Amino acid sequence: MAFNIVTKNNVRDRFKSAPRPEIWKDATDKDWNNWIWQQQKRIKSMDVLEKVLNVTEEERNAFAQSHEQFNMGITPYYASLMDPNDPNCPIRLQSVPKAGELNITVNDLEDPLGEEKDMPVPGITHRYPDRVLFYTTHNCPVYCRHCTRKRKVSDPSSSAANKQLEEGLAYIESHKEIRDVIISGGDPLSNSDDRLEYILSRLRAMDHIQVFRIGTRNLVTLPQRITDEFAQMLTKYHPVFVHTHFNHPKECTQEAFDAVARLANAGCVVNNQMVLLKGVNDDPKIVMELNHKLLMMRVRPYYIFQCDMSQGISHFRTPVEKGLEIIEALRGWTSGMAVPHYVVDAPGGGGKIPLLPSKYLISHEGKTWKLRNYKNQEYDYIEP
Ligand SMILES: *Cc1c(COP(=O)(O)O)cnc(C)c1O
Ligand code: SF4
Image (cartoon, rainbow, N blue to C red; front, top):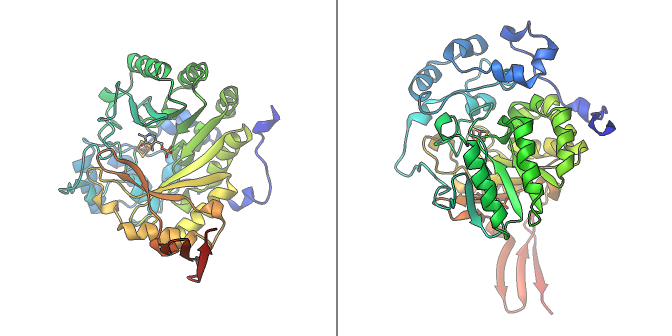
């Protein structure tokens, strides 16, 4: 079908591929563009990482002390986006262990979002009235150092077996109030196409299910995973929403552009959920650039998450003011489409709480609302 053909125009030309690191210079394009090859060649040890980057003493120590609790795993593609000489490269901060991970602070929580508490059956978190999170695997191509589900991700003993999958499907089937299912993980695209199709077809056969979302970071860490066959398969189960997780403009490459194009051409709506991370994207200019690139890729910025209270990620947390500052720097100054909701996912399972800069509402008395616009000009709105 013609819809998979990636549009070649001057928007696509603005997105670039990163040069391949020396150790993979001999790989054929066919291998490099093959997601199975990318999975097999993932960097899991210091020996290989040393061949790609000038690893610092801090990174070497942090790896030695952390990899038993939380694996390192980096696809060659994602590694190719790193600056080999800059330890503060935003791609590197997200995927190579750092000393901060070893620091467990008193406020850190093992299950920061209380996801276990709202679990009626293993593998389902049912917190909101009409939608559920459905965990289908605990593997990911790249283990993000800021992951909120560290307690599970990369621990194969906690992975979703078929029995758990069936119990999850049975729960969704018997709860008619559920209309939206978020297929999650780990990364659900670590499942085979067949297993994903099985899940989607079971859900689509339920009359009360209106939409589902696939929550995946493969668009960022392994865009080769979005094959034409996969995109084609999704067309049978529309409406399919894909929620992804770009954090930095460097992640917006031609490979990512093409992966989104395959999904969007196949009729999927793609949304982005950025996590606010110190040193990576805690700067309004970076977020503005990221969101502009995402829109050119046909990805709509949906959420900015305040970094949660997961264990060993305190070095990534910014003040809440930083998130408010970013929203204030976007709203009005650029397309509303580039302005996501800034939310704090309340520790302990309170759910997502939206925050807006307080400047917009000056006061409200009787029928008069005193308001302030993005340029700090004041206006009265008077109700009838
Ligand atoms: C984030 C989340 C959802 C989805 O929330 P939306 O605001 O609809 O995107 C659903 N369930 C749980 C438990 C969540 O954490
Ligand atoms: S892809 Fe998602 S679930 Fe997997 S490590 Fe990254 S943040 Fe965690």
